[in-house]
Length: 446
Image (cartoon, rainbow, N blue to C red; front, side):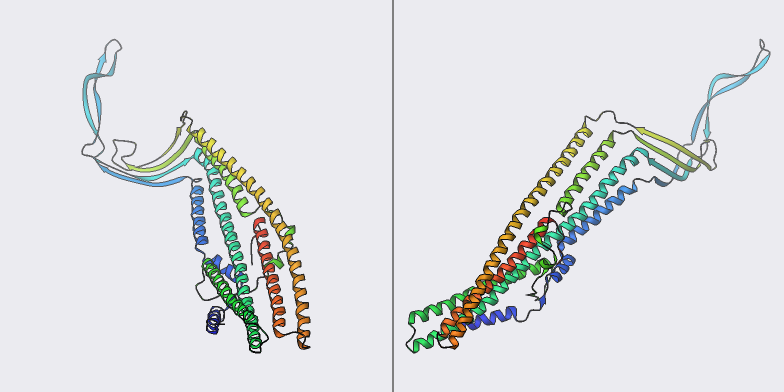
């Protein structure tokens, strides 16, 4: 056996596992939810949606504007007047004012104009329609919130699955190190037996090959654990050397996975429900384009000249008005828009129904997988108990001198293999439990 190779592998494993502080799945999740960039982007999108909601709410109120202007004109306002003269009508024995047929131009006011005031406008029809727009925007914010919850759950699920895979890889690496120790003892015993002429050279070479094979598999397990660790730290946003997982026990506090049903408020399903309601609100906004557009206006002015053009002093006055605009034909544009919106709403509802049925189907399959895993775990436990009994008997036989140490090591290796298989099955069952709760729509909190 190449002892130098074995020493290098042990040194590598010491570097990988000997100086790393432990970290729990819950700590990783907390750090991930705080530092993950995808969640940060989604949170910023939520803030943007809430600002759009505030903008829509502002349209419920009238607009108030302060106005003012000043202008100088090269000419003054003019008014053309007919000249008149007083004439006596003998038939009527009276004097009357009669036009002479001539005109004259009269200049009014002065050359400049200044005014200041306040205007108030309220689009009455648009305010009514905007209530639906506000509902549409509010649903958009709720949709963003639900999408954040969904993203957090998806990332938590991915993190949990990777963490369990990390546990499995580290368990396999630790078990493999014990395999190497056991195979090393077998090799030493066979080497002693060969020198005594008891064991053949082929058996010694076979034992050496097993040690080399175990070393190769150890490197593979270490590399796998290292790759999973890097992916976990990347998702969680951790840059230090934390790499020792703490055994996760989340499944013990979540209840019986076989009693779990698909939650109708599952984030992805709930998001589709909100999206359908949002399309309904949008259809009402679009229908409002058919309403008459009535705008009420009012204001107050102080102007020079005011309403009397011949004055050259400031005058205060108020004003009220209304403007009506009614589109009687638009080429059926709005109708087409509403049809598209209704179709989108139907598509979303159908998608949600399909997703719900798929979740139910997947949940049934996962529960079946969990039941099979439990049976397999019981069988693995039986195998372990049997090998443990064999190893105990082999230890007694070795102490009595009935078998060699090589035979004892072989029995201990079988115990080690069956124990590792049982531990891996337990972690695999945790992975199934995690998939069940994720598929059912439960919020994953580790």
